[in-house]
Length: 141
Image (tube, rainbow, N blue to C red; front, side, top):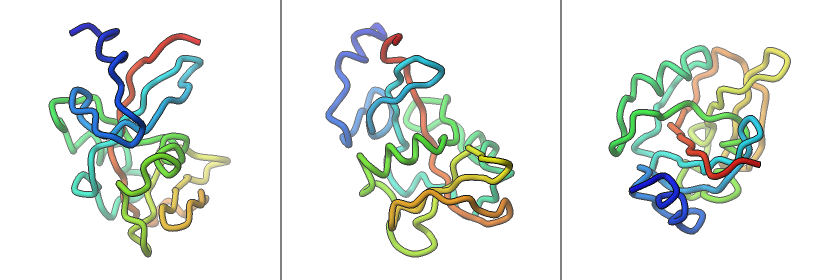
């Protein structure tokens, strides 16, 4: 199946996309190019108690998920897209509802709280969850 055929069959936002290994949460621009964003399908793929400095390594160490090896730690924008379109796929209560992104602002790491939808600047040694994400090119803008 060609990439064009796969992309033309994107499911409804928030639904499983078996060919892409996860849940489709929508599109966003990455370096001026529209990408479909996919999140690993469920809290069983959460990597728990990760310090910010280990976010990328934790996802890399998770290895292949559902036939795909190109999973990455999410950007803050990915997590906000997930909060808007698929928050039911995440823990949404208490301390466990906070997920690291790999994004930083003025040397402060960003985390998203799926309980209330806030984006916060947190301490690097805090331990939160991280969920693998992947993206595929949808089209050029």
